[in-house]
Length: 379
Length: 140
Image 1 (cartoon, rainbow over the protein chains, first blue to last red):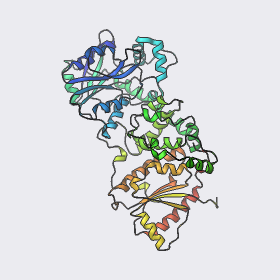
Image 2: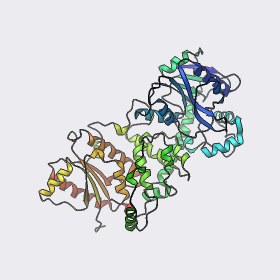
Image 3: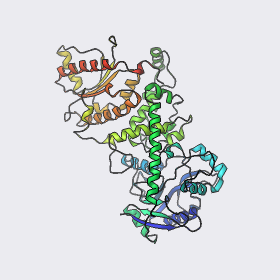
Image 4: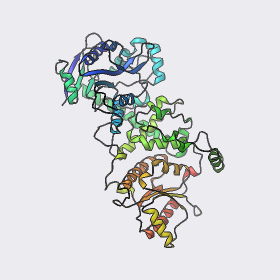
């Protein structure tokens, strides 16, 4: 079902992409465009719902800004039928998170057309602020150019966020339309591939000429993936060594102040209300005093390791590795490294990969009568 | 290690294993007092956090025990429990809580003898593992 066309680039990549998205927004079938947009009041890039084709001038989908995982916002837009179709432009990890939310019936695929890019990664929030302050309006173009030519970033000392440095899933497997940049001469054109029927229908309205992916593209993707997997495995090994006992895990999480920002930022922490903010954890003073008496000392607020372990048990099978947990941490705890390392194990245990397919049931919502006999009995 | 007296938390379902424990009691069977039973309506309601909390509070072993496959009072709660145990046996060993400290068994309502024997075997097993380090260290 895949159809590939080339979007010719005349002038610069950014304006050609703007033209492409304007054309999509002007189609009768598309009501609005959900896409990262440069805010008029400051150089910050945030996801926005654009309905006026003129406002497409401010879109900036390739900016290395990733202030939040937009899967939650798209879930909100699609939870109930709107009767109108949206084109949503998301990073691959956002698409994966959205797919997980769709499985949990918190979002719907019916009213949207998902458009993904070859993801070039992003900077952490604080790095991005420094980056725009230094690189200014042309920062995105310089970033894209540096990323595609595999040279150092435009601002010295600012590198991709840790989650992006170990991300091997930088191309979405579930988008309707995939925009290819890697291994493509982006001064001449970018590759647009329709991966589903609705993607093909949209491309049919563009009157573009069919094209073949350039010869070097697949090899380039493969090389990048291998580098990322190597970096990822090294990160997993370091994290495993740093957390191999409860004592070490306690050290790893020692700076945690139980703000729960990581949970708020997590796109797949799916509960409407987290158990850690309910009355279950609203203990009486006598309870704390009893703990203090039993152990000599109890750190306040309590249950820090308990919180992180519980979150690992609840959502690690759905972890998409976007790194927003680390991005949201006020004390720079490497939360993403811990969660990705554990998620890799838990997803492997169930032969599952978060966000890979809408048709795969989340591991804890499916079961068979005759499975996992090895965990039963005293062995 | 001979004087190590482990604490074992057992989440037992109302319909099968708790009834088996009751039967063991009324049959005057002995089983070690190291095992502390927590009666739940179904093993399917034993959230991962209960097991995690038990270990962090210093339990040396945790048992989840319910009805045999096909016998669940709520049709499939024990299958959900089995997936959760599989998950926990994947997560906990990465933080030094050995997989051998966590067990899932099926003990039916009429298996009073099997209940007492299982508890005995469980305690022997946990004794060979030694104490859980969370009981000895400060955990935040």
